Image 1 (cartoon, helix red, strand yellow):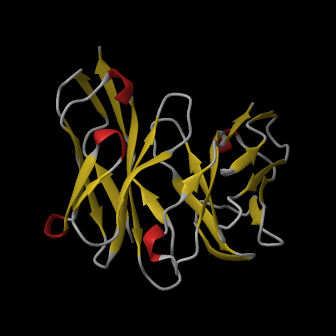
Image 2 (tube, rainbow over the protein chains, first blue to last red):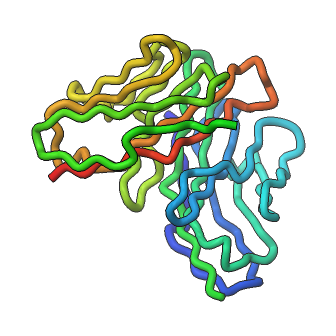
Length: 115
Length: 118
C-alpha cells in the first residue's frame, strides 16, 4: 500500500530563511508526486507536481521540489521564505497503476514564518 | 473557471441524525473523490468515482457512509446515524481524464464541508 511520511509536523522560520520540508513515500512503482498548500481559512491548492521528466520541478511562489527516486523522496524547498508562506503543506503521491487513482497524503507540516 | 463546489460548508447535527453533503466537480472532470480531514492530519481517502462508477472505497468508509454519483456529474456523501467521531472536514476533489498526460491526474479540491456532531 502507498504511504507518505512528512518528517516535520511544525516548522518555525524567520523571514528570508531557507526552507526544506521532507517527504518520503513508499511505493515501488511509477508515481506522480505533489505538494499542496493550505493557507489559513482557504482550501487545499496545488503548489507543484512531478510526473515525468526533469526531477527538479518548480512551482508557484518560488517553491521547488526535487524527486530523488533512489531515496523515495520529494522534498520541498524555497530559498527565502516570506511571512505570507505561513500555511500547512501536504506532500501527496498518486501511483500509476491499473484500477487505482487515489492520491494519498502525508500528515502535513505547519509552517509559521515570523515577520 | 468554476472550481469544485461543496454544500453545505458547515453542518452541525445531533448524534444519531443523518447528514448529506453535495459536491459539484469541475465540469470536464470525470473523476471525483471524497476525502476526510481532521485537525492535525492530512486528507484521508474515502472513495472515488470515474463517471458514475464507484471504483474504490476505503475501509474508513463504514456501512453508515454511502456515496453516489448517479449521472456522473455531482456526487452526494451521506452519513447515517452520525457519531461524534464523524466530526471532520469532508473534502471533495475532481480530476481530468488520464489521456491528458499533462494533467498527471492532478486532483483539485473544493473548500470542504465541516461536520460537527454534538
